Image 1: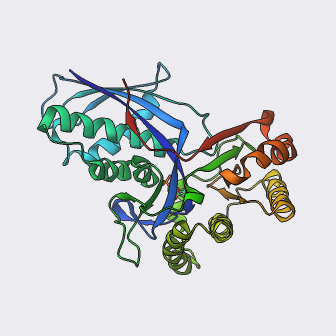
Image 2 (image 1 turned 120 degrees about the vertical axis):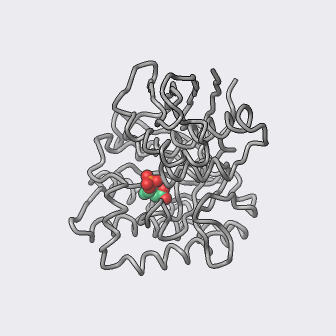
Length: 342
Ligand code: PMV
């Protein structure tokens, strides 16, 4: 019996991944930062079982101590995708005990942190017990990608790129950390305004596939490629105005893609627009480095640098908190990435 436990945070994309080819190859590169508090904590126990070596692993999945057979198909599909890299998984019984620090449907990608945590557990057991070699971060990232595309970025801390860009950097197969980041962006916050905690009306699987026959797809992919290179230059120089301009354009373009797909989806709610107006007004009057991004849902991610922390806490939150369900705001910030627990 072998066991390990890893904690992996979620991430928030500034340049969005929306549209993919077979085997989880992204249509354009994306760039995110990894969070701190919003994470998944996963314990993996590998038990010898009586099935033959050629069989798929069998699973027991517990979320917060409760058996969750409904989680098995997605995890099994992920394990099947990485069996070539980790053949020792064949025929084993895997007990997966997992929990998140953040609520479901909160606008935080649990698939990103969940798949990153599981991929790190598997790479760790592989490195420690099955081959006796150092932990390979890029392999953990590559596996996580096969579970959920954006999960590959959660294997690293700080700002992270996934997908090759025209400057010759990045890979479509695994994520890589962005090396040069100006001190202005070393501490960056993500406060998630829970404006609507209902189920998303479009899953990312459906969303990616809607880009296949989308009339604006090729322009969007070109823009995503250009924005990845532009964002890295901005991260180097520390120009927060250009950072916010690019970030908000990416978020609104993601939603514009959904609104103009067939069938169309409108994921923003009236409160999302109200909160955006408040943020824009606040930025105009204070000239502080505060902007927003959105994932494929209604909740707004308020993104700001350390210079704006006090003003956000004291002046902006009282103006937007009443819009949030049960006044809920999840407060997070950039972090260092996954680590082994215990
Ligand atoms: O990793 P997926 O397949 O859940 O897709 C994530 C898509 C977005 O969250 C909308 C954007 C991104 O790059 O994280």
